Every structure is written in structure tokens, then in C-alpha cells.
Amino acid sequence: MSDHLYDVLIIGSGAAGLTLALRLDPSLRIAVLSKAELTDASTYWAQGGVAAVLDETDSTDSHVADTLVAGAGLCHEDAVKFTVENGPDAIRWLIDQGVSFTLDADAQPHLTREGGHSHRRIIHAADATGRAISTTLVSRVRECPNVDLLENQVAVDLITSQKNGLPGPNRVLGAYVLNTETGKVDVFRAKFVALATGGASKAYLYTSNPDIATGDGIAMAWRAGCRVANLEFNQFHPTCLYHPQAKSFLITEAMRGEGAYLRLPNGERFMPDFDERAELAPRDIVARAIDYEMKRLGIRCVYLDITHKPAEFITSHFPNIYQKCLEFGLDITKEQIPVVPAAHFTCGGVMVDLASHTDVDNLYAIGETSFTGLHGANRMASNSLLECFVFAMAAARDIQEKVARTESPPPCRDWDESQVRNPDEDVVILHNWEELRRFMWDYVGIVRTDKRLARALHRVELLQSEIHEYYSNYRISTNLIELRNLVMVAELIIRSALARKESRGLHYTLDYPELSAEIHDTVLAPAPASSAH
Image (cartoon, rainbow, N blue to C red; front, side):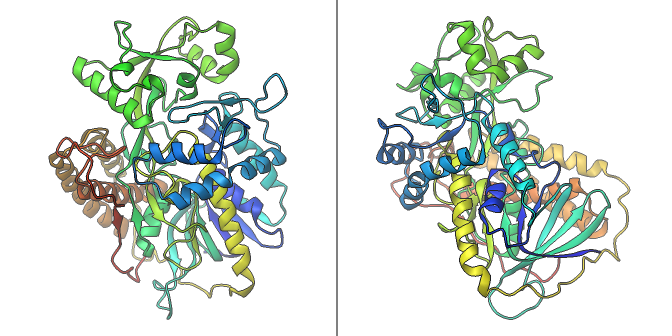
């Protein structure tokens, strides 16, 4: 077993993790762990862009107000103001790093508009903003001699002082990490650990997320003793490409921002019947409308139509979507795009303050893993990437301020696999994975009831016991680690949903269709962490 020692350990290589690495002092020794390749993160697949106040006709107050409206009364106003006010600086920093955003005819950043926004404030790189940001930041981090970029490293669990029987407040000491190339579990010790592992949308059968979105950071933080909040608010992106060969391909909201219509199979528009903003209503309203029409008519999808725009406009604004659809035999300049809602974003997460600090000393959570209070009951389009940059920068400032007076962690217990054996039936993991994603989609999806949630909770508890037995007795693998984490987060999602006796934002239940007069977050607190790993 290898024992690695760093100043800062960053688990995750998306926008949040890479930004944190680049914003820390070059004198610090930093490790960035990626489960697969460095660009295999949700950031890479983000199409729309980053929301920020960049135009003189726009204002901070307007961006704040739009976010508060979309969040359906649950946004933390201090977090919203903090994020929006720091937005322009974050964009300037990205430009300084070399991100090539799309420019208009005057060589100024081209701004588009998306659902919930009252102004054009989405800066983007055509329809592949995430790819531009991810590849640029990876390139910049590769130039940093103080940063070790380590691929194919799967974090198993956090190492804490409490788990190691040390006195004093519970603090993070590092993490156990599975090297998938060697099959060995190594110890990574660090003064500070940042969880930047993304969300948990792979808990659902249909998702726009890459395979890595298995809630690892949320589950590890929970087991370490951190509270989580508002996990019942799972955002379903209204428009994922519906095609048997198209896995998780998103059709950006910017297409509706540029005038695309949603239509039924008979060609009829339906969004004006649900909301006066029609196709530009917030995502929860659009996703619920599509779900309603699909169930009402018994259809497998609806259609997104931008054929009324000039072909040159479509191919220049949405080149990647045009090309991808063409690969499936679909010319979007002439044909409507079949779309369905898909799990897209985890609005809740590990509770943090405005410095991204969690309940465990020296442990941070940034990006989709965290709950900052920005999104409330419904994330507004393109605020998530902004949150990654602003809160990663805040974490960097906080770590920098503390690092000189923080001691290196002591030696930790080795990973003990002396009592385990090689698994004999991995088909059990595959079956459990498929069962989880199916019942989460059926019972904990866009429209919920207490009866459906109770069914889901019963099933997830059965899975928990099976997985615990498997985890305790067999040598671990990536699939087992991810399934263990995903089932844990699924249980937290279900318990959060059962606790909310109202319909608000992304949480819609037929048993409580109205808003409650009482506005509150759903906060879950774990039992004290055990000493076992």
C-alpha cells in the first residue's frame, strides 16, 4: 500500500476541482484525483454556458431576482448575492486562462438567454462551453509543477480523526483511494480535502450525466459526519435526445432561448397552455409539462422544433448538436428533434458555508456535490457552472488563510482487506444497479406520491443490506464503490422527499399539490461516524 502526503487533496476533475487547484498558491503540494480521464466530468458535457452580469443593460439585482424567482422561495439570498456579485470576476479569470468564448460582430462576448433569465447573460463557446472550459483548465493545471493529476483513482471513503480514534473535533485526514490500474487501495493524506465529485443523477434510469455522476462525494461526506440538505430537489432537464443509440445527449436550453418550440406529435405547441413564458419557463415547469403530455397521450417523446430558423443560423449557433443529430440520421435544419426529460442536476448536497467549508474540519465541498443555498427548489439555467468557479475560489481563499497554521495529518490506518475474498458473482452488482435506477425513475421521478416514495424506501433498504454484506466480504471494485454510494444517496433523496409535505419547485407530489406557508430547507444529519471503514 502506498501512502501519499499532500497539502490539498482534490477529489474530482471538473470545473470546481480544477479551479480550486489553479487558485491555490503554487507553493502548495496538490493532488487532483479523477475517476477516469480528467475530462470525464459533467463539466465537459455542459452545452449552454455560464450566467453572469456582463452587459450594461443587465444588473446584479436583476440576476439575483431571477434566481430567487426560479428557486421558488428556498434560495439563500446571501448565497445568491455572493455568487452573482463574484460572477464577472470569475468570467474574467476564465478568459485570462484562455477559454475561447464565442464573440459577436463587435468582438464582444456573445450572450444568449435561457429559461428563467430576464436578460441575455449566458456567455458561451458555441454549444460546447463545457468542453472549452474543461480542456482549457486541464491544460493549465498540467503546466503546474506543484499539482499531481492522477487518473483512474476512485475515492472509497474519507479518513477522519474520529474514525482513527483521535481526540478533539472531527477533522478530515485524507482518503482511501482505489487505483483501478493496480487494484490496490492507497492512502492519500492531506491537510485539506475538497470534494468536487459532481451530483448523483445516475440514480435515475434516464440522465444527461456521464457515468461518473454517482454521488460519491455526498455519500462519503455523509459517512464522515456531514449534514446534507434539500436532496429532494432533483432537476430533470426537459430536453434530452430520444434515440435508441443516443446515450445521455442533451439538447441545450439555449435552443429554446433562440426560439425553438416544443410540439406534440401532431405538431401542436403545448407550453403556452402551461405557462405564459411558454418554452422559456423554468426547467421544472417545462419538464413537468412534457411528463404530463407524455403520460396523457401515451407517447414516448415530444419534439423540439427549430426548423423555422434559417439553416445557417442553426448550424452556426448549434454546430455540435447539428453534427451529433446528423450522426443519427436527423437533420435539425429540416426535422424536429425527439426529446424526453432526463435527470440532470442535484440541487441539494453537502451543507457548506460561503467559504465552501463543511461540518468536518478542513473538509470542503464544491460544485454540484455541495449545498450552498444558491439554487433553492429549482436551479436556474447556467448558474451551476458559475457556482463552481465562485465557490472554488472562495475555498481557495479559505484554505490559503489556514494552511500555514495547519499541521500535516498523522499516519492513518491501512486499508484492511485481510478478511475479504474476490467476488464470485458480479452480476449481483449489475442487477442491483439496474433495479435502483428503475425504481428511482418510477417512484422518485418528476411526479411523486407518498405511496411511491414508501415503495422506493422499502426497496432501497433491501439493497442497502445486500450491498453492505457484499462490501464487507468481497474485494472492492469501481462498480461496487459507485453502487454503494448511489444507494446511500438514493436513500437520502427518498427520505428528503418524504419529509417535504408540499409541492415546491422540482419536488412535485400529488398528495400535497400546494405550497406550504412555512418555508424551510430539508436538513438530514447522520448518526455519529463509526470507527470502521
